Image (cartoon, rainbow, N blue to C red; front, side, top):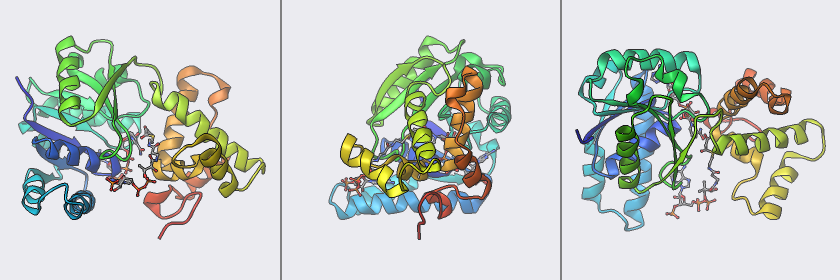
Length: 283
Ligand SMILES: CC(=O)CC(=O)SCCNC(=O)CCNC(=O)[C@H](O)C(C)(C)COP(=O)(O)OP(=O)(O)OC[C@H]1O[C@@H](n2cnc3c(N)ncnc32)[C@H](O)[C@@H]1OP(=O)(O)O
Ligand SMILES: NC(=O)C1=CN([C@@H]2O[C@H](COP(=O)(O)OP(=O)(O)OC[C@H]3O[C@@H](n4cnc5c(N)ncnc54)[C@H](OP(=O)(O)O)[C@@H]3O)[C@@H](O)[C@H]2O)C=CC1
């Protein structure tokens, strides 16, 4: 059974980007979130991105409308009934993900693949919340989704070979490069990236330098496109904290302990760019 209809659960920064690239590749997409206002915010971002492509002459106005017409808003998981593939991009929290996967398992057709965009949580544990662990897989996009080429693909213990193959094919069809990695906390991307970001936060916490100086060192000295504190704001400090907690708990090693300053900011609701304030202030 070839995948034609994709449902994306969670219309935040990742979910909206995933819905955009899937619709651009010709898939019929349902974009789901808890409230219509969140779905509309996601659709607004997609509209803006596509308009920029029209302005730059990469897309005609008709093509833009066609892409948008392939995306249907949804606030009910019942809409999974029509999906061949569900890509979950809700918050990085195991309780929420297992609850969503349990419901999706009951609602989605038997043939449907259930993928998660989790950035660090065990795929095998998410799969165990369903009665179809062979059809559950990690499909980890990078932010911003329309720009970044990589998709980490992670098999759970029971993921079937044909499911892996289908997800690899879809990844290529949407213009991304698949890289297979094993099911360990943080996979490859966040096992390496997030301790660097956490260390940058410790560097600020211990007064080694200002936030601007830390970012400048990594940008100019290491050629990173964004400094680590700017990148943390961009990813979302809540997501950064969840990932560090997953690494800390998953490996049981104190080297992954989240910096207290990161915890403090998240408790204050300073979640980075998406909430208007993190290490920096955004309009
Ligand atoms: C946490 C996880 O689990 C995994 C992760 O995702 S970790 C995060 C991984 N991502 C990164 O590390 C991103 C690091 N930053 C960058 O690569 C760059 O700063 C950036 C691509 C975001 C912006 O690039 P830039 O050159 O500084 O800015 P800018 O010139 O405005 O943008 C470059 C292009 O990207 C596009 N772009 C930038 N931000 C965008 C966004 N949020 N959405 C869509 N497109 C975007 C711009 O439109 C522009 O496109 P064109 O050149 O085709 O016109
Ligand atoms: N940010 C990043 O750079 C990356 C993030 N990821 C992963 O992608 C996922 C989403 O992250 P991101 O998009 O940044 O987060 P956001 O906070 O931007 O978006 C998450 C969205 O999911 C919604 N949501 C929460 N619970 C449910 C639910 N039960 N059903 C449907 N929607 C729900 C949230 O609604 P509400 O606001 O009401 O909670 C919110 O709109 C996480 O697992 C994260 O780890 C992966 C790669 C990169």
